Image (cartoon, rainbow, N blue to C red):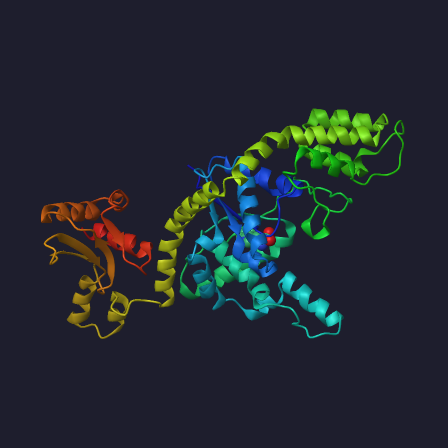
Length: 438
Ligand code: TRP
């Protein structure tokens, strides 16, 4: 079997999804996520949103709308990893580890930051006026998003390619210093995916305020389409399909036969009113059923919240263990761990502390007369705590299962829990070490 290729991309939660997002990102990403031999990671980049806007309601609303849009368009959260960036605390932690290896000079060259500085200088002001450290650090946060999951390919627009190159750079530098932990990602630019023109003919974009919301109600969709700028040719006059925004939009939704027929209609002098009506009908035929699903989803935010939490747990099952390794690699280690002992004089004490580093279950009886157990890491850190058992035999059976089966931890979720302040990944890693030692 060929190796699985892992795709990952983030969507900044600052706006409402529009037709350009749908054609340029959502639709191709969902189609790609169904391909065999791929794993897809799609996430809501809400930490990135904070760099761009300071409007809490807007960030929240956008997160809801974007999540609902992807789900309504057919993203299958059981097949992909679909999560919200801010639900993954490993990401900001990795951001710091990467910050410490990222060259400041590299970040100085990031387009968005540089453009802000250049604008200030051109206006004769302080170069850093209005520039936050968040904007400066944007590429490092993005590198953490990508490297955290060892993505191979990152589907993005051209404006983001530099960020992917920076993620490679930063990842390579980390690998050089601390060992080969990260896959170096590549941008995947969708060459054949159209960029849609907006209402005014420029590229459809939030920043030009010329968008058609993906899920505008039908009447509004019709009205917006009627307002697309055209030339002043009358009905009956032949029209050039290739320079027409209305035609380009049509083409993004139509199949090749429909497109060819419409091209002919332009040559035959179709009126703009009729061309726009056909465009409206064609878009509504595709988007209408999705809009119905979207409206139901948006009306039930708690269901989406639940989906995202589920997605976060799935993502953290990958992020947690990797981050534990990275902490170890950079030297954020337990002082009692084998590595620190090994670097001390190689005495027999050091050798025995290497064995002592295995985690241990401790069974005990409380003054309530009932039976308990806990799991301590090799350094004595308390990781797991059981509930009360009626007999030592019951407690022992649970311990035996935890030592034996990788999935016992989930099955016994009701009788044993990770103690407060401890990362679940640490506990699962301790159980894995115990199984391997057995
Ligand atoms: N910066 C990206 C954008 O504005 C969004 C994003 C955040 C992203 N993190 C990412 C894209 C990681 C790809 C991979 O479009």
